[in-house]
Length: 464
Image 1 (spheres, one colour):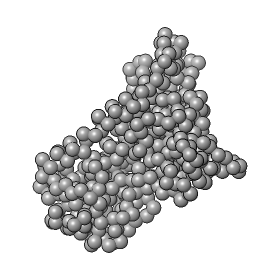
Image 2 (cartoon, rainbow, N blue to C red):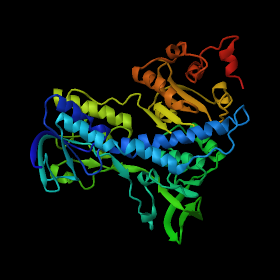
Image 3 (cartoon, rainbow, N blue to C red):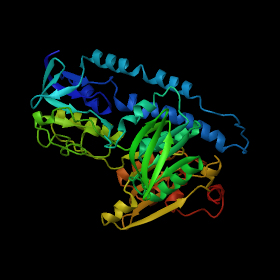
Image 4 (cartoon, rainbow, N blue to C red):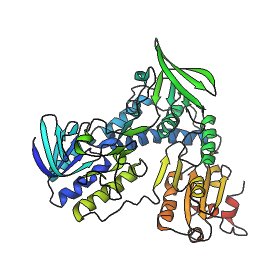
């Protein structure tokens, strides 16, 4: 399928959305992917993961309400059935994505692309030349240079397990490990997380991470920090994980060991050198328009670009930025202010804006309000004990610079704070919003130190 196009997009996930807008504007467009069309979020990440997390949430909710008018004895996750449900939702996606693009007139090319010139690529026997190229290849598990690394199971494979083994070890203390650990623990597995640093989930507020780690341990997840995995070894039907934990040799026996030690941009075999495209550890080096700094005909978006956090909303934002700049000239800059991030543990941990440490490191004068809210009504009514918040407000202006939430509905309430951060709202203004009560969002004024009423349900609701 040799051809010349206005735009060739490498990758078919969220960041490839620029292909649709350019095709609708009359451009000739080709999309190339060496994996099934649809991308990580739809096929191997957000959507299938959340289906599993939803089952864990349901089990947790019933167990937490045990003795509070709910009887949930014998409640379990049927893993095989859960995976069947996941496949029924995910498996049709590639065909649907291809059909929608084909109906628009987008050329679909299966195979791994490789640059052989500034805007020329080969895919198998095909040669594609374009006026512009968008690299939207996403990310893959980071290679781990340890003996026995071939015994690691990827997050992709975890999502497709026919049966959940009884003993599961996660290497690394990031999103993947904590989210899947919470699912596996609710499904009855004995779960261990081995994290080589002193604190897992390093991008999140340390006080809330401490609360989450405590809550994780309470549901049976063994979280070990300062525990560097040195080697994996197969011994019959078992896997032996050799680690160095707090200066001592440590061995953990497992049936499954999952790679949760981070992801890297999927760029290694694209032949970027042939296109003169500069890259860094975090991806293609781009300017504020997401244009390669060394080849202005090439753009990068999502996890493939060395800008912003590796999140799905960032990829969607990047796709819109690239589409505008391709169609209207380079005039739209990236703006990641207020981008929200969530770890879908049970309950979830969420953040937007600056952490307390980042704000102080930037020289901002801030006041910080934080509290363990496991005793607040919004948590107590659900039988939940793992909850907290931290809000970072700038002195003088009163603007909300960052918010960090842990607990029921934190993944939804964080979006209110994301709006506040992005629009530069003041804490006093947000605190005056009359939120529906009793809801989780009704806690927001109390998080912002709004004056409490002298009497009445809202004030009483927050008493411990």
